[in-house]
Length: 473
Image 1 (cartoon, rainbow, N blue to C red):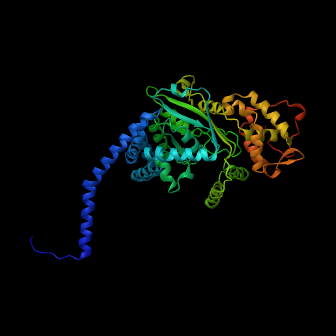
Image 2 (image 1 turned 90 degrees about the vertical axis):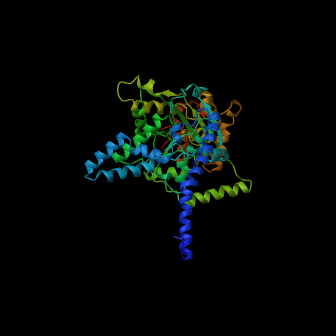
Image 3 (image 1 turned 180 degrees about the vertical axis):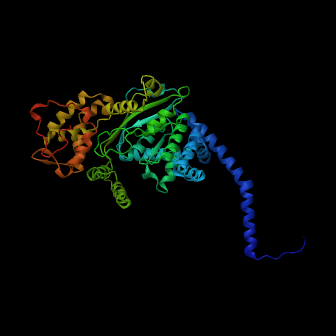
């Protein structure tokens, strides 16, 4: 025992390394984790004092623990056994699939990542690109929501900026949990999105086992009081108009509600833009008849560099207004009490109707609608028509103070001329025939809010020849 043993230097270093790792894993790391976790808990407690709706304990559960809870959920366990029996595979193989689905779906929320980085970045990006406007259909209605209720913001989907804009505007109220599609499962973006509390879904999956796992997670989040945000349309609008709702996630939320437990309150939110950054990509997808957006990373990087160069040279201009209107909340328990059967479909129709009635009316959609309806016009004719529409619409939709309403038409015209969507010929503004689809894209966002016949008399011009959307407006 006391004899000297000679070892090669590399073996001694290896043994020393193993000893250091063992010491750290058994003594150092647990202490460090405990210290860091205590500091994070105190930071979250201070943060909750500033938020109108504190971060729910459900969001703060460790991701590993949440995955284990989801895997061992009784409904998921039964679904795995049924799947194994139906497919003729061992149950352990089915449970491994469940584990893979759970790891794919479950987020890893970080209050630090959300409020210290994401919310600040969202505010900076939103205000850098747009003149942001916010209005409430019923001011103060959100403050009257039961503090114990699960709040679900239900929104129309106009742009990928929707995530950024709503995150920024809701940062003082609570932390939102989004359902995001396959586009976000790209490293390292996926890690950041997961840290912000978003959960990934396969929108076109026909796998019953996957749907059971997803439904179980949405149920846990709903019963746990997690504040959520969802897009019932299931994807971006390709033509600018509001699409029919998809019932998947909404049905999971409805089925997860415990009549004797906490209520679920839906808050309709409508968004609109003077410029949707990916409008041309959406138009190309609409013409191709498929939802496969061909936006190469090189093209995106080139556009970002171009905007950066404009900012450095003092030629940068924001892309107009971005507006959000918050509608009147809808209690699921109250609504379900009025329905004889499954309330999911009538609930979806009611929410989409509420969203459509509060879509913000902005300068570019107004001018685009005037040109799509009546073809080439003088600036004075457009201003008269737009002014008449403005006086007939509630101010909550307009996001225009009274002193700015008279300038809305001129502002919209300048945006369209700057983008070369219209040209000036003989004192008349004429839509570019090659880019007429973009005008229709913006006009469609408010088509349902405008009167069928504005009755502007002699100023009316015939619709532009070949304008397929004029009849629809």
